[in-house]
Image (cartoon, rainbow, N blue to C red; front, side, top):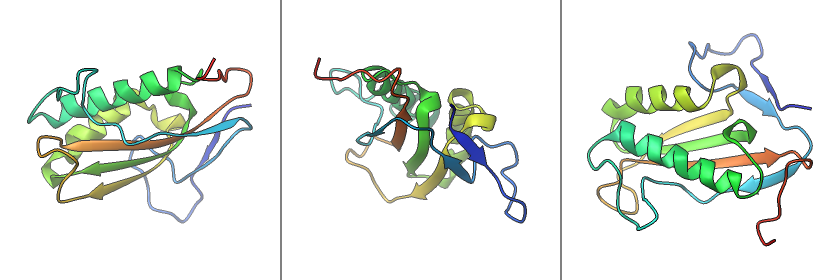
Length: 141
């Protein structure tokens, strides 16, 4: 059974953006991830000054986290994105659409903030995923 995205009549249109108004999660293990930013494994920032590059690296980090428990990006049911500059929204949306097809995309929220944990970071992703039991792997094993 897959997650069931839904967009009831009477709500504003997503205009092809990579999100759905709601998602009914299929049975499985709920996984809460810490915010993922554009740090590489040595804590160096990937793409300083480039929001698209930082968003892509953040999605790569999310993929790595989910893969550790048997998940994929398609298992994300909710995604909060914190970002600094309104001008970066088109880049964020383009990268998000490349990683999350609109038909199966999670419920999502974008929140503009005055800053993140490091002054050179431009975007942070905070996903919640539900991994089907058949694919779930215990990260401790």
